[in-house]
Image (cartoon, rainbow, N blue to C red):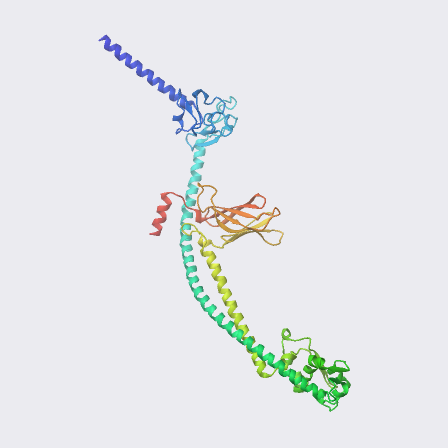
Length: 502
């Protein structure tokens, strides 16, 4: 019986020893401050410690000895020995977070439970726990954000529907424009052929007209040149009554001077250059007819030949014919008709060419808008080329989505291009997609680099440009709110969106 009692006591004593050892070990684990519950298993007392990055294994006594052994600083969770060290705030009653080890025991309460300050006697008792207050504020903020995303997600769903509709409209418009383009190309081709034919016909008619007028001019010159010395003198001109402008059967000195341009003698070249044109006009038009002929006095100035000016004077009335296209006036009616037809053919071609270019420009703009990446569900499509402004003390900034970013001084002046739409970017694999836009190839800076702008998107109930900064010279950063990014990767919003679709 005594033997059994001894055995039972021995077993009980062994159990107590084991339990005490486990309690002490757990107590030691708890006493290592600055580690998370998940990592506590790696700090087993009495065993060698392996750095959490696996780079080194050290004795357990090296933990928190105020000397940095591990590259990842995992051997000094409770000291500030490692420059890259971190301290885990448990923050009972609130959310845990991590602070730099340099803030441990610095006299400032960083953790809401005060767990980062335990060695400073002055500070003891002053780090009261504010975790419940922080948790309450955190819950309020979380509820606000949840409501923002819930409402924003509904607005986003409408933007998705609108974006898809607009893209469909643009595609239909593209088909219509392509059909119009083919028709416009056909019309332009035909009008070009007609223009070229009319121009060739006009060129031929003018050449024939020149030859005819040269022959006629030479004939008249020969008639005036009575002694055949290849010159026209004033006395010969007086005998030729065609220059009798006032039709009084007498060629006055003034009339002969007007014709001869003050010269005593006209040779053939002078006659062909100026005299013939003046004589031709006088030969076929009386002064009264010249004055009132619509082809003389109603010709537009941009079609006139100002180098061929002459005056007709009369004792009772004085007028000049200085707005006359003499060259065309001397053409035959047939030639004038051909010239007019050529002008009309040219106008028709220019109109057809303008219409084709206008259609091509519209197609180019549509293609540009259709190839853009508007997000997984085209949630940004409805905002294409929508512009938003923000003005500070110096500048007015304008963001035109998927187009460009500009800056203008509040004192006036021209716009400065801060970048044109490039693409979506991610700074790391953990960044959410479609949250950062890049606008590059802006106006050159003094450092010979082109300006560029990053636009960071966040959830908001309506599009709004929040802030603009210039982190480095000619490098810009914008904060922009809009409903298109009000989406979270959880079932609550996704399921709600699916129900709305159904």
